[in-house]
Amino acid sequence: MYIQEEPPRPADPLATFDDDYATAVLHIAWDLHTQTKERTLLFGLVELLPTEVPPPFENDDEEKEPCLLRKTNHRIFLRRVVMPAREALRWYLDCRRGVGGLPDKPGEDPARKLLLSDLGEDPPWPNLLCVSGDNATPPFCPPWQENPRVHHLIPLSEPGIMKVWRDAEREKATDWLSDRLHFRFDEYPEYWGSVHLVAPNPVYRDLEMRSRPGMPLRGSLFLRFQPRAGQTVEGLSMICRPNSWMGPVDIRHIIVKARILRIESEARVTDVQDEVIDLKRGLLAQGSYAFPTGFNLQVNMVTSRVRVAGKTPEESFEVDRVDKGDKIVTNETERTPSARERMAEAQRQRMRKRHVDSRSQRWFSGAKVEATSVVRELIHPAKREVLLVDPYFGPNELTFALAVRQEGIPIQILSSVEMLKNRCEEEGQEKEQGEALLANLDRLGAEDRLNPMAIRVMTGDRPAIHDRFLLVDDRVWLLGSSLNEFGSRGTMLVSLPDPEAVRGHLRKAWDDAKDLRVWVDERKKAQVGT
Image (cartoon, rainbow, N blue to C red; front, side):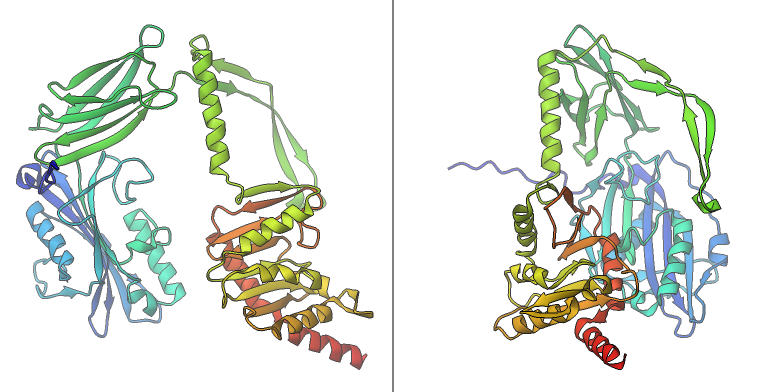
């Protein structure tokens, strides 16, 4: 069988490096131990400048005012150096080999080395990533770099310097560097100790795309390149995919012959996706362009301001009252044909339902059996940990913890004094809920192959946590009511979109709580004493 072999193209996206880039800016931050003189790289960025871009002025003020970490021997420095592009690329490739150093300045020791982390790369060198859109573009890329090509060297584990700094020092270092590098390391922790190469599009600055409606159900696309000085876009290859409501309506393979292109479409185009390829440099850019067919604008005027008085100044507030306003609608007569409009709306509804799966958001009412089954299904596949937080968790709810499938998975339950101090009848005897819960726990603990289980109690007149939470591995669910009545009346089960923002609070409440056995013993002693 014949197999067509297609080699990778191009072999080197920087094959025309000397023609594309003349200068570069090296942004480098490092930690200095004042006693050992050891220098640890905190962040490095090589920003290549297209030949038409003049080099910026160097500013030594940042380096003259380092960040001083209190009560330690550590100082943080930031330097920006303008240098020839080839020299900057050589520095980056040295870092890739695990050899880093500070760029020399007059009067400095040229042997000043930097301690680097064990770095992994993405993508494999010499390939470059072509990024587009706010979500994919790295935060250190300035807005003028349309579709920058990037290469990353990322530490394979947290740099050792992170373990040396205390929390306060790390916070101060983060704030100091964030003010100067224009992104926050607490939002991008993988960038600690990292090195990056940014190679802006060397051929053109921007590609503008506009849509002009034509005959009904038809339209024209106008594309305009803005070549850089000394560069031409002729000969570039372009893949253009005009899309309608439900997907692509065409795919065009275009060889660019002029700065301005017009593409006729048989369908009304809502957005376009494109890739621009250079035979020598490879993928130069990719993007997506949306073409709104109109807009709906409501204009309201503030007519009065009402002050609502509370019992205290903190409870008082003001409300701006507005009129009904004027509604402005454009292209209302150019409505999508009814068949297409119905299909588009139905597809939006399906996508919305798929985005919120049955385990992310559920409503229960008069369905306690079903709700109980769903909670057990969430607990069942746990692979690392289970934490149930319910201020009204009592003896009858302990069976929820038995739903874990895998042996050895620790199960933690956090209840509260508000529930456990109440009295109940257990095996013909009246006792406190906490004592009954402990008895049930001991009975289960006597059975073989039971997962490790711990119960703690939130003390105080009011529990530290009011809501109910279920933490299973990397996910956290919010339960609208306690497990003892969950699903019997209208209530919600919601998967939190950012569980890490809540996990720390749940863990702190667990750490601050008291072990159930200790709490029960203390209650008994206090009751005997009275």
